[in-house]
Image 1 (spheres, rainbow, N blue to C red):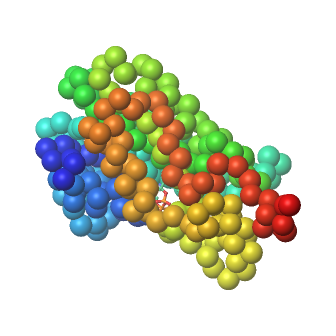
Image 2: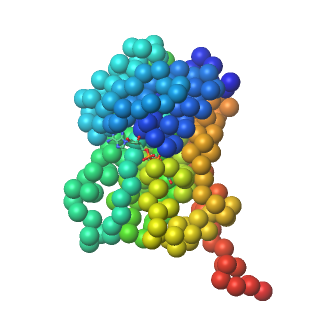
Length: 251
Ligand SMILES: NC(=O)c1ccc[n+]([C@@H]2O[C@H](COP(=O)([O-])OP(=O)(O)OC[C@H]3O[C@@H](n4cnc5c(N)ncnc54)[C@H](O)[C@@H]3O)[C@@H](O)[C@H]2O)c1
């Protein structure tokens, strides 16, 4: 019970990593409010706000409503996000805007409207969902790479600006996690791509949303009281480097 007495607002709480965070945080004693574009049914979430993270006014209203219900906001997890494909020549402008608006602008907007409460409390922990794709570029992932690289840097920016007010800001960089977002990779036709991607994880498997939620729990809890501005990889060793022996003996 590492979050007894704490309150949390989680965007993207209806699915995948956000959902796993909501369930784990509740199990650890936190009161949890979910914000999602889709109405969610997740045990442990005591109230839902349906809002699009791209739009400032609905997000400001949702966070204000959450604060009214909870009385304070100790933890914000920004897990709302979308994936996309495409290289520089072929990403349509609307798709670039959609992905950057949800993944990067949406993360900023939720922080923008939670931070004043955390500054007033002189206490808070923000956890943004970046990705290994914010650290390394992937083939044909122009807009997603841009959005996640941006999430890492705005995380560090806010850690600088609000650390003196007692607010910690960190992000998580998951590897391949088995959620609805990545379901397409497990469907017929993409077996070889999925296998290559999985093999890049030194543990030899994809991760579970609960394993990301466990890292989020650490960052949310007082155990991480001196951790701010970090981009914590939860990637089974993907960004550790390259293994060459799959192709044959190296000595
Ligand atoms: N699954 C992975 O392999 C993986 C790896 C690294 C990073 N991530 C990141 O983790 C986060 C969560 O991913 P996931 O795999 O759980 O995805 P998911 O698709 O399972 O869940 C994403 C949630 O975000 C919500 N959402 C989407 N657009 C929204 C909007 N405009 N406003 C409000 N809510 C919106 C969806 O309704 C959904 O509930 C994302 O930022 C994703 O980029 C995922």
